[in-house]
Image 1 (cartoon, protein in one colour):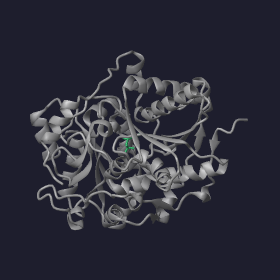
Image 2 (spheres, helix red, strand yellow):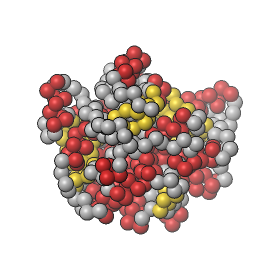
Image 3 (cartoon, rainbow, N blue to C red):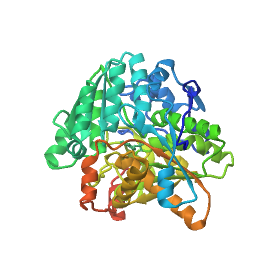
Image 4 (cartoon, protein in one colour):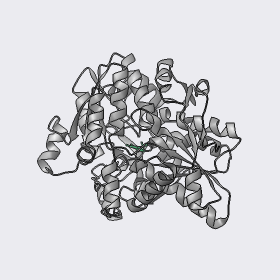
Length: 451
Ligand SMILES: Cc1ncc(COP(=O)(O)O)c(C=O)c1O
């Protein structure tokens, strides 16, 4: 029988997360106060985040212990299997070996659970009783409501309106785990009401939903805000993915030549890639590639500069690759990849030449998704399918060059709630969209010039 899955024994789960910051030549620039443009103090940030997470955000330690209660919950679904994609390899006729790390096995269905559990834990430890958050695709909102239920916290989710209507069962899932959810922009916050007044038909955006969730936390003493991507501590929590993958490759005496992930804010990709980026920094030859949609080309068309994390300019200014905080992307079927910014740690890694980026169109993405579902069985999330599209391209290149490469990609989540997107693809209704360079420049011209 084929050995399709490489399973790490439960007692070999990594017990520390890896922090890339101390390995970089230039670690991320400080967050700035959105009013004064001066470095934001920990006290200012503590209005919306617990100290435990802020310490991780600023940490220069390369390794951070994972607390036992978090490992206890991780044990519900971790270690996740590393799969060899024999079916996909055969269909492509490639000499490349393709492996994927299957993060879709977490109860909410994606990698987002890895940081949701950690964030709920640190908030609980500091006496917080409710978390507010945004969600794009619904995967993050599901993961946080799951984690909040396990730590007995209340949870409020603002879901980007277009995705809320595309995926009604994400709402049901979030409600089953006891959280409340509103389509964003909503009439629950000043930020939401202001946008609705100006643009009543807006599809919403992650930037707007973040403004609503931050305002909710900043105006309620018992509530903190929780972000599903971008921030250093989120990427830190996700490194368990790559750390497990390395142990699994050690078990079979192999190692990837190419590491691939889809990129929204950057957390699942960083989670898989950063442990490999550390190897690359110490001289290992390795290609690390992030894949994004042409409709939201943050890495390939954005600029690396200070911008706000949200539309209403409530978050600190973050130095990152950005398309401009007032970016409202077209309603493509990868809600989780529609964010204007990129994790600062990932932005720095790109700047230092550790990571390459490519943008792909959604019809190619869904073609890859369907081939994957028909050869490997699992129906991928549209976000994840960007990584599959990237892996297929690499495998076909290996075929052209007659090279035996080993390709690893992150299978960030399943697409069981994304079937309307598949229906649209199969009916030929999906339109490929390339976000124009001029619109990026226009939006960036409205930004304050800092640094
Ligand atoms: C399944 C899945 N993959 C990837 C992403 C993109 O987020 P990130 O870039 O932070 O991993 C999302 C975001 O919602 C998602 O749901």
